[in-house]
Image (cartoon, rainbow, N blue to C red; front, side):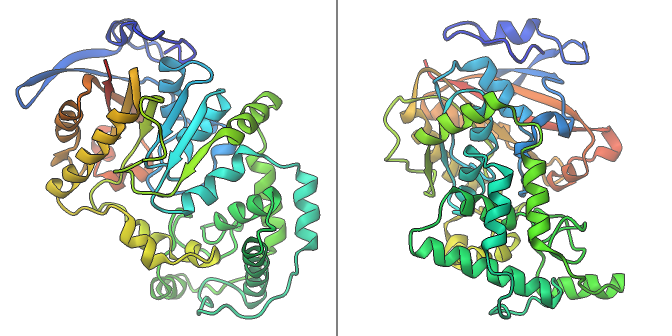
Length: 414
């Protein structure tokens, strides 16, 4: 797929998909599916490579249920021009808007969880490594004990360093004195709190996109016969900073800063976006919460503590529907809002998953929602990827089929 190819507004997306080839040279399979009483075009193939390191180092921030940057890049490159507005109402770690910024687009991001902004905003303004190092050296290294028991995660000396950093950052923020370097350090530290290697602050735990409960961590420690070792959090933050900035070019830095200065970043309910003007968005690329598959509230309790956020209050704001009926009711309101803010000729790329062992295909529920809101359904696009371990979260049996899929429903506003 020539992902750098732009499809001018008004051109035929379907015609483009029918003639394109995958990065490996294999043709795209085209057919139709019946959803309700409607026939919808479906295209299956490898539309972008899934190789992790080809996504750009600035994206390497962990978060549950995040898609790879190649997904939004495909649609941004194809369906927008420089200066167009790209939006994500369920922004998560900010993959869509960071990629849009890199590509010279203007951005709007929203997520009910304020952690999303903490993880996203600093990356629009990548710092100088020397400035980060200087700031880290100026931050007190020794604090007291945390106000909750974290002994199952951290060595006592590591805990003191974390507490000292947390107190510094919260004090600076409370006094409105925090700057871009502080916010960068907070972002990196938030993503180094727990993980499965010495590149994290904690003893070995579950993957870094979630924090297990203290009780679960005690069981992990007992099973592995492990105890928390000392971690130098300054060294880890600086190392991760270097890694994040590793492949970033001067042009990408300029594009990110330009987008960041104009960016609109909200922490609101995606069902209502009153601060976004009518018909102002050219493209939305998003992946909504999938029923109750991912427990965003429980996974982020430690990150909320570090950033002084109320996890209970946040949890009540996050859509965690347990049934398809509840989920479609919420997403129906989201689509009506998307229709309001999308400009004529604009698009929505709505990524859904195969959940609950393929018994629920959410695209079959999403297509009617978009149509009812006023959109035209261009197609269902299925990107087949090389097996990834995390795909098991979505109920995709990769051991049987050898692939992991992204399923995206593409809508257009006439």
